[in-house]
Image 1 (cartoon, helix red, strand yellow):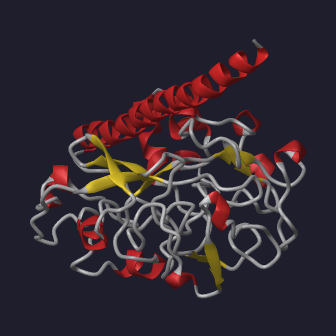
Image 2 (tube, rainbow, N blue to C red):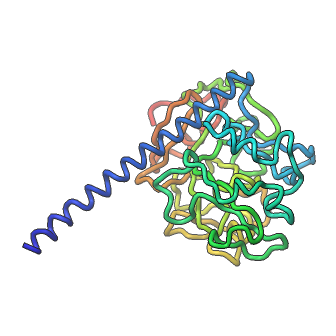
Image 3 (cartoon, helix red, strand yellow):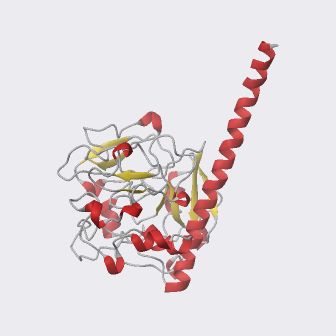
Length: 324
C-alpha cells in the first residue's frame, strides 16, 4: 500500500507543480499587461509616454544623483493604484540630491518605503533568490547588506521583474540612440505612440527580467544601470551568453557572487559601463513574457531568431515582422 501511495504521489507532484507554475505565469502576465496599459493611461493624460529615465541635473552623460534618474515605473505608479508610494519618493516637488546608498539615504527616503515591495512589479515565479526589495548599499564601497540587516546603512526599496525597453544594445547606445535602433523609452525625453511607425503591436515596451540575488542590484530601479533600469535585446531570451554588467560588488564584481549561470544569471564584469547590457530573462520554462505597445502580452520563446527579437524592440526600423 505504501508503495502504491508513493507511486501516486510521484505521478501527481509534477502535475501540481505544473498547475502552480501556470497560475504564477498567468499572474505574471496580468502584471505585465497592467504595466503596458498604464503606459497608455499615462499617455492619455499627458499626451506623451513617461520619461524612460530623467536626469534633473542636466549633466553630460548618464551619471549623477538628484537622485539617480527617476525611472519610468515611478511615473506609472499613480496609474497602478500606488499613488501613496509615488508621492513618498523624494522626487518631483520634494526631490533630493541624495541617492539611497549615500549618507543620509535613510532620511531622504521615508521610513514608510523601507522594505516595502510592490506586488504588481514582481513575477511570482521569481521569488526564490532575491526577494522583493534591494538596497542597503554602504557609501565607500563596503559589501552590501542583507535584508535581515535592513536599515543599518541605506533603505531597502522595491525591485521589479519588469523593465522598459531602451534604445540600442548597451548603456552607451541608450544615451546616443542609433537611428536604426530606437526603443520605446529614452533618457530625458518622452516619446509619443505616433513614433511607433512599425506598429504598436510589433514593438515591445516592457519585458521580463530577473531580480537576481539578495545581494545584488538586478531589478533595483533606483540606479541608472543595465539590469537595474535598462534592458536591451543584445541576447535572445534566457541566453546562456553572459551579460556585461558593472564591475561592482552589487552587480558582477570580483567580490560578490553575481555570476550565477546555473541560476540563469550569467555575467562578466566590465569597468567600461558604456558596454554594459542586460537582456530579458525569466523563471518560466522556455521563454519570457513581453508587453507590446498596443497593451497586449505575449510569450517569446528562447529559440526566437535574434534578428527578429531585436527588430521587435525597435519602433521605426521599417522591418516587416511575420509570425514569431
